[in-house]
Length: 192
Image (cartoon, rainbow, N blue to C red; front, side, top):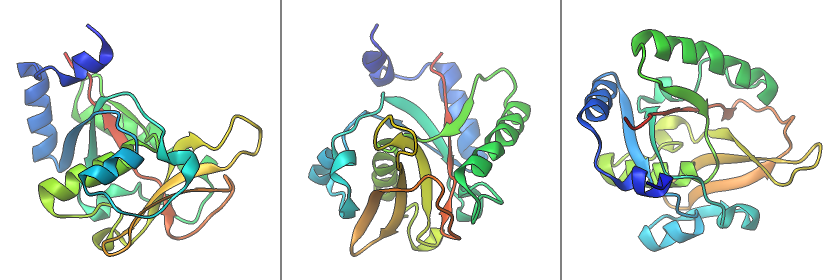
């Protein structure tokens, strides 16, 4: 079975129980489809700015979770520090997830840019809340997406979803720091 077909298949009872457990623990869980950020416009996604270099990127379909409480959405201590220091927070978050969900095979990682607009739109439609929006301080998160493969390439950020103007997707210098540029992590849920 292809990865795409696997992601579209119904969840096993084991995976469904894990998804329900994550939900009770404050996670929002969504299946992403691998759509491009530009194609999400057809579903109602608005962009304040979407860099043309990000518009047609895709990511593999996945079952992803994130903390839906704005106070837990961005990793604590991830603001106003360089990305290289932010990603050092990921292993500690992985340890917390492994302790809470032993043997579940969950993977904590930085998101791929195309995942964030799709997750944001799905969550807005399901819960009426804009991740990276007002309740989230109009902040941004770094992604693992670069503008090119050259040393010093700019890295994509996602966020600052102003309801009237739309979601923002752009590139910034990888060494940039800001109190509004934080790191939100995703939890990948394996399908069993």
